Length: 283
Ligand code: G4P
Image (cartoon, rainbow, N blue to C red; front, top):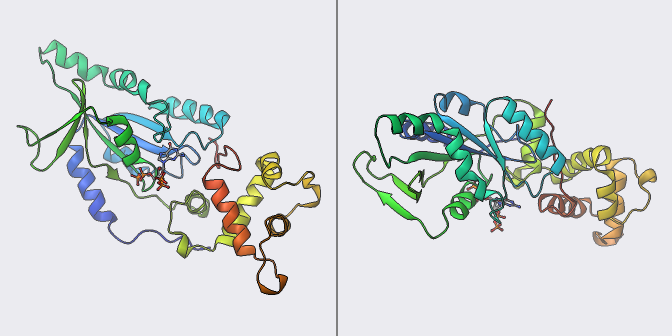
C-alpha cells in the first residue's frame, strides 16, 4: 500500500517551529503511546537542540501498560524526561509541574544565582497531527489560567498561557510531520488513524492489524469477536470472514462484506475496544 502524506504545508510548519524555538526553554513533545517511535519526527532533536526536553506518552490509556513502562525506560535511557498521560481525562497531568522543574533545574538555578525572580519557563507543545496537542493544552491549562500576550519580550501576536508563576505555554502547538522512513512506520500511522482514511485500503489495513493481533494479542482478538478457539482462524482473511458472519456484514445476495468487517475492526482498535494494544516495542 502506498501511504500518502499530508499536502505540502509542512515547510511552513517547520519554519514556524524554527521561529518559535528561539523563544522557548522547554520542548514538550507528545508521542502516541501505541507507536512512540513512528509518531515522532527525529528532526525535532535537531530543532530542539539546546532546549530542555520532555516527552509525553499520550493516549497511554489505549496502549499496553507493560509496553508503556518499557517505553518510559527507553526514553529515559536516551536522556529525556518522560511521563505517560491521558490528555483526554487529565490522568498523569498533575506530575508535569514536578518534572518540568526537574528538567529545567539548571536554568532555574542559574536565574536564582543571578537574582532573576519570577521568570517563568517558556514551553512549546509539539507533535504530529492528531496526537492530542490541543486536548493536552486544554486539559493542562484548564480554565483557571490567563492568557498573556504582547508583553515586552514577547513577539507580537504570540499568545502565552500562564500556567502558574513557574511555567508559560505557547498557545499554538508546533506541528511536526511524521517521517516515512519505512513501510512499517507508514502502516503504524495509518493504523492509529493518523492519516486520511479515504486514501487507504481499509481491508488491507485491517488484515495487517489482524495479522499483528493474531501474533501478539490473540486472546484480546478472540474475546472481542466471540471466537472461543482461534486455532481454526489462522489467517486474517479467515478472521475477517468470521467477523462478517458474527456481525452480519453481508452485501446483497449474502456476499460477505469484508469492507464493513474491516471498518468494524479498525474502529474497535482505534477506540480501544479490542484492548490496550501497543504496535511497536523498543528494540
Ligand atoms: P492534535 O491537536 O494533536 O491534532 O490532536 P487533538 O487534541 O485534536 O486530539 C486528536 C484526537 O485524540 C481527539 O479525538 C482527542 O479526543 C483524542 N485524544 C487526545 N488525547 C487522548 C488520550 O490521551 N486518550 C484518548 N483515548 N484519546 C485522546 P477525536 O475523536 O478527534 O475527538 P473526540 O471525539 O474525542 O472529541
